[in-house]
Image (cartoon, rainbow, N blue to C red; front, side):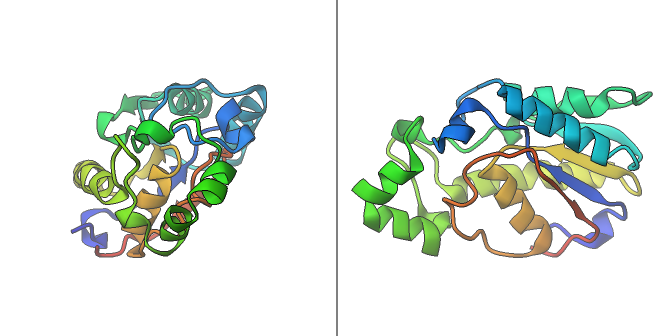
Length: 196
């Protein structure tokens, strides 16, 4: 279980800047893609907004857009470490990689509804379910929280896995898989950690 007693600092949950697939409404999942020009602007904007936070370590997914975003956040900060966490790799969408979300909605309406109503059970052909991804990321988040006490933790992780981490830290269920599918360089501050 993840609990507040393990960690007393704030957690910044940061989505990477957008890639071309994000902007097109395509599922990138675990495909490794760089940020688009707009994504770089989003990451720069996030870095400016987060200047006031005392960040010592940035934990990032291994994908290129997340690492680029982490590097942008670290610019101008003394003694900031970037740690790539393999367990933060995004959900494997299997045969759905590159598909338009609108295409799934049109051609697979039952699957689309399932993604809205019970996303934990969604598993693309040849891919990974949200439930399996949640198990993988829970272990990594627990380990990070045990290592740090009062520090502000920054986690850069792409969607939809960022929504899974959000649900873990807030004690909520993941809702609407499709709305949590694309990155847009946004961030949120989580000041307390629920038990999950």
